[in-house]
Length: 272
Image (cartoon, rainbow, N blue to C red):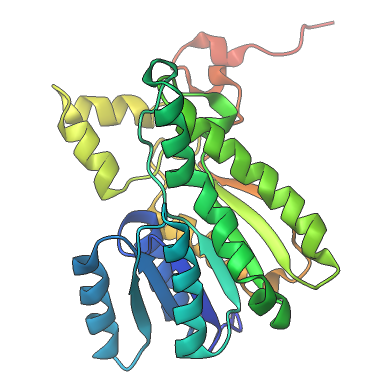
C-alpha cells in the first residue's frame, strides 16, 4: 500500500532513539522528509549523516524541549529548511519517577519534560500545520489508564496528552487538520532492556511480563508502534481524528483473568 507520504515533511521530537527512532525510520521509508528534534547531538547527527549518504533527508535540530525557546526554534528551523510542516509527531518524554513524595517542584518539572512541549510545538507550528491541512500524532502511554505507582508527573502528563488530543481534534477539524494519539504499553526498547538488566533475573522478569500480554505473550515491537503512527500520518487515514489508539497486544484493556495461567480463564456466563 502506498501511504502517499513522498516529500511530506514531518517534525518528530525525540527521534534519535527508541520509539522515536522507529517512527523516523518508518517515515523515511515511506518517502517523507524528517526534522528530528533531540536534546543530545551525537545520535541525531549520526542519523542525519546516515540518511544523507542514502540521499534522504533527516535533519537534526538540537534542543532541550523543556525550554520554550527551543520549541519555537525547532519549528522555525524546520520551516527554514523545508518550507512547510505536514506532520507533527510529539514523542519526546521520559518516565521520570516524579512521585507523590517528590514534591510540587518535581511534579512541575515532570510536566515540562513530558507535556508542556507537546502544546508548545503545536502552538508554534499552528499556522504551518493549518496551511498544509496536516496532522498531529501524540505519543501517550498506558500509564494514564492503568496507573503504575511512583510516577505521578508522567501519569498526569500522559493523561493530559490524551485530553489535548481530543481538544485539538475538535479545535482543528474545521481547518482540515487531524489529531490522534498512539499509546504504547510494554514495548521492547533499549531503555526497557536496560531497566530489566538492572534486575536480579532479567530474563525471568522479561518472561513474567510477557505472560501478562494477551496477544502472543510478547512485547510490542518499536516497528509495530511506528507503523501505526505512520499510517495515522498518511492520507490513507484521512477520516480518522480524535482517536487514542493502543498498540499493546491487548495489555491495557483485557480482563486480567485472560492473562492468568489457570482455570480461572474458563470463568464466564452462568449456565442456565
